[in-house]
Length: 140
Image (cartoon, rainbow, N blue to C red):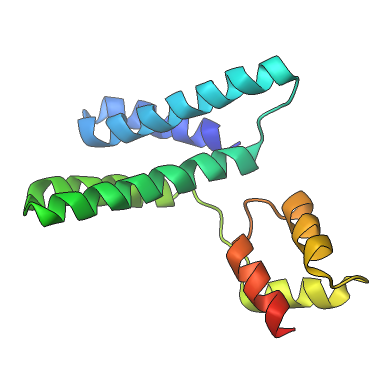
């Protein structure tokens, strides 16, 4: 699982005494633990797709934070945040291309928006951008 790789990277950052990366890995691990606890109460299991959502959300938060530091002209913090963002992006799976999405849509028997979106959510969650799926569906 992706979270195991993040935990290994956290240990390596600890050995390297890299507090910047340790901080962001710790945040992601804490978010994962929170999701795990809430999933356990409802009887669900946390999978890689959930970890990808956590990573996507954290990367988006880092981008917003970097923009705010740029507004106040704090370049040092922006560079730290960009390093953290790049470190997290290494754990993101390769997203499907528009051609791959179009091929899957063309192979489906029903090309209605609700069916296609549900199909991609169930089978390709975390492996494709749902906004791109909707855009390709409109073009097909």
